[in-house]
Length: 380
Image 1 (cartoon, one colour):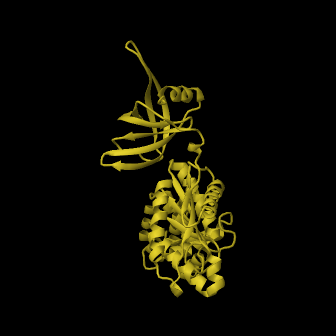
Image 2 (cartoon, helix red, strand yellow):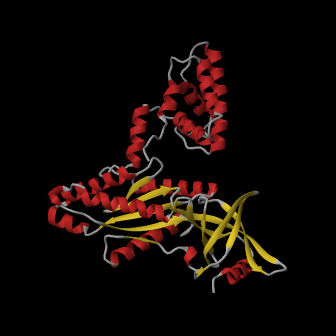
């Protein structure tokens, strides 16, 4: 994830004093039909405030009208920033004390406030803000994400034997290797000392483990001062499998990291998940699947528990989807008894061409349904 707190491409498009009032209003009005995040960003750029999406859209509409009114009264081309400043002084409920500041200075100060000076990764304070937003996004859209703790092994020895200057170089080098692996949507921060945290949106625990493997491979060959080598221990937790709050996810990932440390270091552990808190039983039989009213076909049940299930399918399911399963629990010559139950897809992975394995968590308020299902489809 790269820092572009003011979306300068939008800001510069609107802020130029050489644009006609009509062009400014047209550009700004066009942004009102964009995604809500764009409106929030643009309102923040113009007024240096953080507003809820609906409030940001309302404020931008009012600002358009205010700009038009000032332009008409003055009878000349007006910089949108002037209108924004005048609007802000008239609305103390939005901006209590408007302040003029150079755009580049403001952008730099925001960057410095969010970034760790040694590693160039985000700092702990900004991590807390980002993780809260990512959690809210995942809840709202029914998506998943994972967190990975990275803690360098025996880092104190490097500082003690070679000095803190060399230690700082090692930390910076590790941060560069982490940064090199990040996708655009990923996020990495220095958590403290020699510990880092990576947030991986749209990624389950298995995807996070693959990220950790790639990081291990990079650190095995990275050039460090004094020909030093470095390994790390890691802990992974995924939303919503392991926890539904940022505090729970960090606690469980940190606990998994601790287990890695006390069990030999130089490896990564995944937190025990809620879906594994109930015993898994090997399953037999098939289930017919539906997404809304669309039939997806049959899947072969792999295992079941009172919490969830896993299965093999010829089509790929997306984490976050809620799928309806129609499962045969009893079949005789004269009748077939079926149970319908919803499950939210938590993870999936490709086994081979046209074959996928996935896991889901039961979504029902009637525990008797799940008990009956497990009793009948668990292989004896």
